[in-house]
Image (cartoon, rainbow, N blue to C red):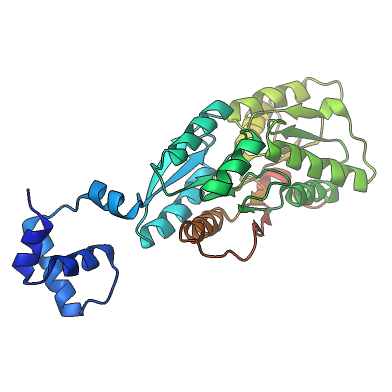
Length: 332
């Protein structure tokens, strides 16, 4: 097995110089660094990661936990995390809770066991006290979801304001009988987007008919099933706000299955602006989240915490954007 001493001998430098080149610390002349890197390549030297971890108590690994890896919304958030992590010499370990809080708790143990230097949670459904206690001991950042009132660094958009904005758009299109397919109401995003919908309806003095509020689970299937329930009403809605794009697409599928047209018969809007939203038929009106930037900011905060650097504030609210496409029609 090739040792660090072999690299040092071939490059005609000390082992300390090789270590500085490998860790990118300390001052090493460019030509010296190039000699070391050439020797590493020639000998195919593989650094002993475990030995480095024991010396530095660092794993150079970040754990990212998502609620559902099959949801395309998370892909660009993860891309933002990965880019900044790579630039700073970290690798990303991905965990999928499959929307089960007990799985989230299990991933927290990975941090306690020091198998990662820090954690980004794109889900926040475990016990608040346990999570707050964990953040006192280890670097943790929440992104997308949050825990109300918790003192944990968080990056998200204002989901209430965003839901209110897209509902107002339907109202401005002169719709009055508007339904919503919510996300799961035990999840903060589901509650917030319902709250924004209700605020807009109340602001414009429109009735909040409880039969027009159906709870989904952020999947295409639930959007389809809940839309079929809405279509079965004696007086169905003329417009529907689905709390994410997958459910909006499911709703459109259900509407088409009944021989109706979107937006001519029923307008549909979604939330998130996933990649498929613009190429779906009809193209989906939705709220665009700055997903890549959410990932970037979350990992930047986490790296600051890992390195004991101060952060300017604990809560970052990034800007969303209403994207108007074909699925809701034009102003009448």
